[in-house]
Image (tube, rainbow, N blue to C red; front, side, top):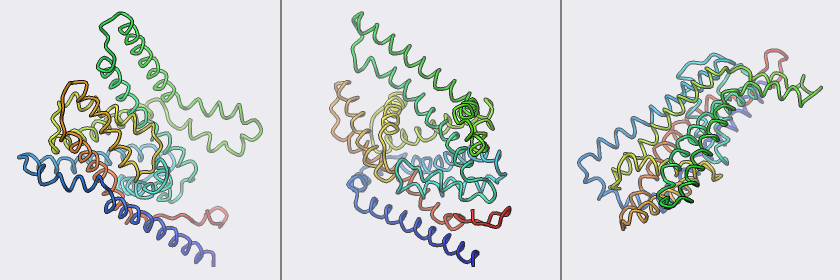
Length: 344
């Protein structure tokens, strides 16, 4: 009876997730003004000689992006359960599918860990969170340097007061980055901190607290390097799409503005599906400010930026989510605990 119940519960949750994912995808794709903007712009954009080649490169970089993420997640999860790179890749795509209708993509953590057969789920979620922090830090690093570059364009530094503020800003950013990176690379100390503040209750959470001490500085540095590479990959996708949709901007300036955009999007709480609107709005605001500061009036740039941002969202989230939905059938939300025969 327990086995039948377990299979029934697993099936019902799988069907629910898949149904919700495709309902949200359908609503966003067929009822979005941003998608319509892309459709309207496409006949003009496709006239470019490099359009097809750039589009192919964007799709290739999609797989590079998530391959890097799969390598990183496998590296961290192997401390708890050995999995293949293919299993890791499936878990990453499944996580994207589950996260589509959940705030701030928290479903990404749950979607991944339920593919595991033996590892403790809570430990796996904690390991996934630690690995994901490296991506957040990578975004903060690039975003911070983008702020340093953009500061003189926002505030004139031709007088001593503003120049002094600029120097102070640079020092503050560098110090903040050093503290953040140092704290991340020494994340293992949290095990000791939790032990001290939990007192007698430490026995109950010991196996979870120990997750923080599983990863050495070398492990955390490896994750950070992978995350920095990922950032360069999906940022370059954005640059390619801007060029595809005829936004005239240099690579350096585009990367600076993209750094500000990603930093802004990271700060704003979103559901993955509504992120298309948030990212589009932030992108347009940043690019419009850039063109105004340069004294350039470019009416078509806004449509190009919205189109590039929308296609990037579609390629990097919608396609993986649609593929990941098929892997949801491999998830086991309830499994038999071999130690006591109970559902886990």
